[in-house]
Length: 202
Image (cartoon, rainbow, N blue to C red; front, side):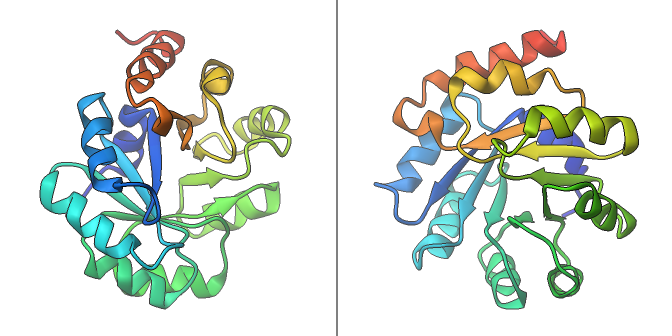
């Protein structure tokens, strides 16, 4: 499957994050899709996560599904086997880059510093995960925009609904990821509307 990763993430604006240990994560995914989610990440931190991702894939074939917390070749292989479209990692390393290349799936590598952004950019990663958001996110994102104008970010890490508009104002933020909407999936609709308002999109 060939995808325009930036466009899919940008259009999604918000990426809900599920784990295999959530209460009925497949039903949660159903509710999130009803509220407008077009990209969902499933964290591969729980032994049930691969089965959850595969079940969501079967129910929502058009959804862009991300396998999260991919750390190595074994995780990349599980992502491929369960039907993930893309992988997300909290960090980045040469070994992880090699695993992504071998798996043939796009990777959104985790970064936090200029050196990390630059390293990932040199290897062709123009959509990166800024993590964690609370670690000087509002200071670093504008600096990264000035230096690495072709890099966009999926921002995650203890975000709340109250922070949606503030982070969406950064032009290099493609989307925000988190779990804040899981308690009230209907809030996703209003949060998406706020991001679109900030972007001037109706």
